[in-house]
Length: 314
Image (tube, rainbow, N blue to C red):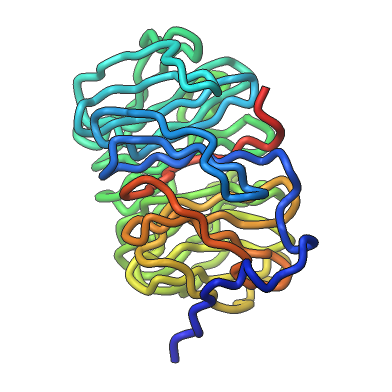
């Protein structure tokens, strides 16, 4: 039985249900060649940046920049929070996802076609080096302490772990079928969405040991965390699966917009979900599991990466 869709819930909720003022979402919109810049307390679109090349991957540097990855044009761009292009590089493969290493001012970008990761200078985007990967590397994530870089190797059914400081390989771990998006929980465990086997693999990154394999909805894509729970977007089910972090038990299923993909937490316990086919961003109260708002975006929101700035725009 499918959960009931929450429509126009935001009209009936009290102000206490809304996110704190200040959080801003930078939503890459692939079909619209754009980034929608949304105030998450009001839903106001502060700006809409033109970003050629069908942007999908995104990463936010709280120090003052937003990175986008455009697979069609192979361009990686660094924007100021005001939308000014600060740096741009065209790569020669299939860039798809990015994650920013604030401790070392580096940007990691996965190359879908050439089984590698690029290491770029965070300011200039000049290439600093490459790391080997295997068979369609996709999602990237850094551990909460910045020590470990994880990459989902989709067509190898595997996750690769690098030491983020030395860039040496720590280990690899077999997961479910076609891993794509992944994310580190606040306690350091890695959660991996396997789009081919409709489950999530939970890994101890220190040892590479698989701790659990958890069934979720159809085509799990991205993972976010809030209120002691993991939230997993299910593309084909138009839902978000909720998992308790303490015992990994299922908590519930929330219906959102059509084809949910990118997911991230706000600073005060809400979860934002980009719905690619609906052109919306759903906002979920992580405690009550209610959809409290639905905000419009440019065409085709993907938001594949860490797309929320926790704090006011300068």
